[in-house]
Image (cartoon, rainbow, N blue to C red; front, top):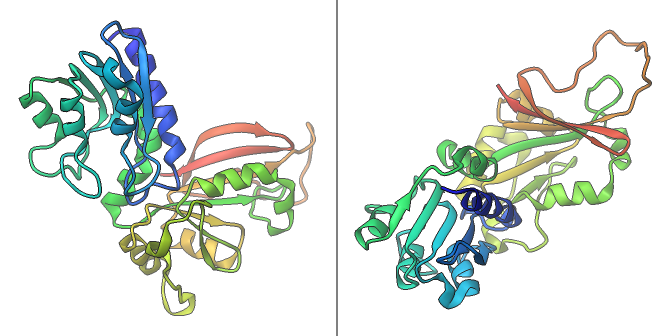
Length: 296
């Protein structure tokens, strides 16, 4: 691969995230098409279940310029007829010469899209920037493997780092709204489950929840059966702590308020992320520090 192809794959990874919160149970996928000279002539991503996949959207944008060119796609092109035709078929019909794939699809049926592309004479390369593509696709794959949605717990913290439900308003509204919209479902402080994206998913996700009689793991299993692949647990409620205590939280996002450069706390326990999580990202967000932790 040359540097332009690597840049194109990174572009495909970046635009794929625009489908987070609206593609489930399908994965969020991105695709970029290069022509024979290596120039970008089209790109696309998957928006909703039942709509065109990333490859078809990218090929539509590229038109005749896709012939003899290269398709860079974050997930192996699908190989079955469902609500849409298989993407490997669209790539073959467009006369694409090469297909570069970041992540192989464990749900691929039959021989797989990559195998049939090769049979049709298309050059296929796999595992291109796989680790980077998994930043977007990782939660979807984890949900498939576990049979339940990937769970993120987000909360604002007091100066000691512990959940504090009294300062939710301190975090920028736009930031919290954008976070909610990147998840299929959101559990609020009151325990109600709502759709995270305003685009909605229809009746597939209208699952009643009886918290007193059902544990967090059972609830997640039921939500997984509806097709939900990601769940945001919000705030410092008993429902959030119940998910965490059950070991069902995969990731935490904590907003820590600013503290003085020299400060002696009144309490004897300070923390950044809960016990059992490893810090994976730290950024400044206005008057807060945003800390992301993955379960060890």
